[in-house]
Length: 346
Ligand code: B12
Figure 1 (cartoon, rainbow, N blue to C red):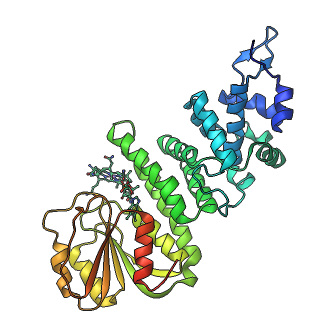
Figure 2 (figure 1 turned 60 degrees about the horizontal axis):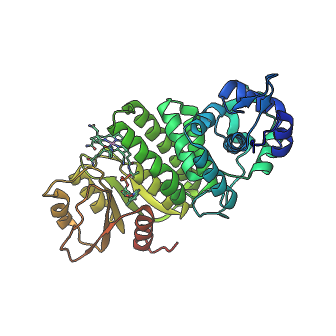
Figure 3 (figure 1 turned 180 degrees about the horizontal axis):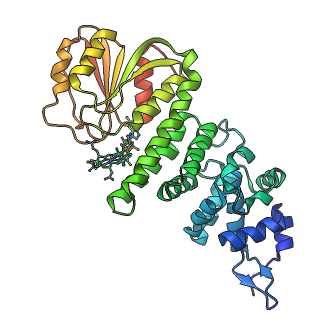
């Protein structure tokens, strides 16, 4: 039996998307029917309709039309279907259904103007959202972030980061969206398919959006600050920025020293502030003889030293009367250790 196919008007009615928008997605972005009649009229199959439905969800999330179309073009029919099923049952697609999230509709869509999307009114977006579900899976946002970084599309990247932070708490955003995006970007760079300029842009904009969470909470910060630093000679420090933001959400003050913190300077800062905890990040493998451990001899108050990141050996040990050393493997464990050392609970 031949597959049923639908004209534009019927698709428009079924999905609640204006017919001119459907035509524009087809003409400008290649998301449309794979068949036309002899008279050149569009006819959408069920798989075409799935693609249009995903397009509606992505653009309603604030992903610009071309970036959405690029993501969709990179997926086969089964991946599109899986994506739709995931976001039907769970808008985030990662089991976090029901989490507090802000409606992303029209205000997140600023970048799409100028490419034919102006005819998408806010009402149409709302309609599209109602007809097709409220959200998209984390994996699709990751794809969009990677694609925007690749195209050096700064405004879209910033928008995707911002919208993600509006929808998700920092830890959730980091673990399910930002860290997977960074790992993808790192792998693509390693494989020679991504320039370091994309990596820099993706990192800088992410820092700036995470810092806005810190700024928004700065008046609530209380208690003695914990110290956050990158080990000496370590250039990576995004996990520290994410930790700073999450701690700020918990009203825990921190002193942020950034990457490449010289060991003597870190120990001097510890001596001067006697913090309850220090978190030290390392992405790149540490030396055999870590000078930090010896430098900790200067500490004579009870405190916790927490190390995290793939650069640390798995068996770090410290023999010190006043210091509890903890090694953590993920973001949540780092936050829990820092909150505990600061006398807070989640
Ligand atoms: C962004 C980035 C940069 C930026 C850093 C910007 C910044 N402000 O931080 C720049 C461009 C400066 C940079 C430079 C370099 N980079 Co770089 N970079 C990255 C990238 C893409 C993300 C880094 C990041 O934040 N990772 C953090 C999270 C997302 O990843 P992860 O650590 O693997 O996560 C694991 C755990 O740590 C845990 N986890 C995740 N999140 C969190 C959070 C917390 C708190 C905890 C405790 C655990 C945790 O989960 C994962 C385990 O499954 C990574 C790719 C990658 N896979 O990390 C490469 C990567 C780390 N870089 C790499 C390299 C080689 C370099 C350079 C040496 C390149 C060069 N030749 O100059 C220099 C570093 C110089 C130095 N001495 O440090 C390699 C490292 C390989 C290695 N192990 O040695 C990577 C892995 C890329 C790759 N695939 O090859 N980089």
